[in-house]
Image 1 (spheres, rainbow, N blue to C red):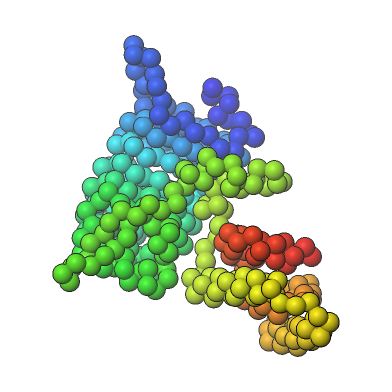
Image 2: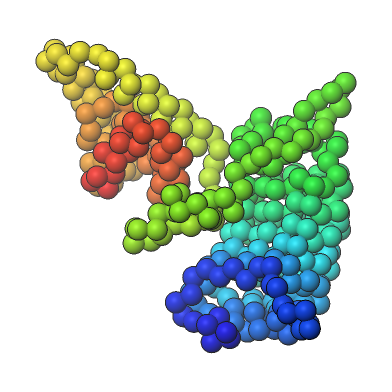
Length: 343
């Protein structure tokens, strides 16, 4: 078992919910040391799930003594343990070392406002995209600390906070949603207002486990399989995302309309002429674009050019993320395949 954990080809491992024999006792401290030593030498593991091991704050501290040397782990799931505030402080010290961590799951861990505040101090300096602190003992002050720092400067896009005491802090959630920093589909609570007071109700967000076990949404047959789109996706700027997605919606409507329109030679020539003019505008608007980037605009659809212009002004990973968000529409999926054929 220990040799398997230290394998240089191991990518994802889920050891959650151990079921030891009734006459055996699972030593959480010893197991934490094993996991830590494995993480120290492993150079391939990206996801680790360790739910329901009864880890205490001391166990987590022992684990992270060696785990701090790991450079590949992107997601760690420590849900349903007894980490508490002291254990979370050890995790915060680890995050200060700027690991590759993109997903942190700490649900059901008796964390209070003290731990939430400590976490808020290190989030701006981390790469964390997915944060799950649901079903803890965090009250309004702790929730407010996390929300305020997310609103100011973090890479977090997926947040789970349901199961804590949320009352007045629901107003901050409302403001964050309106500003576009977070999207409701990526949050497990929905704010509402009654008699001038804000409250938060549970919202059935698209949880990571549903995607994790859904093979149809995991590109297992590609050279680089994507299991956790949340972790692989880069930090984004919401305004650019919304602008590009709006253009994508225009593209959907345009392609639907073009199917219903006639295919006369005159209309084809008119569309092609319009595309050429728009291409010249796109290529000249940003002179910093490379030649290969400029060649990317050579398509026959002016709406496509509009989408590509916006996407190419942001980083490459963000463009791929936005394109993946557009894949929900079959017609647009075909359009994206067309856009990427020369890329």
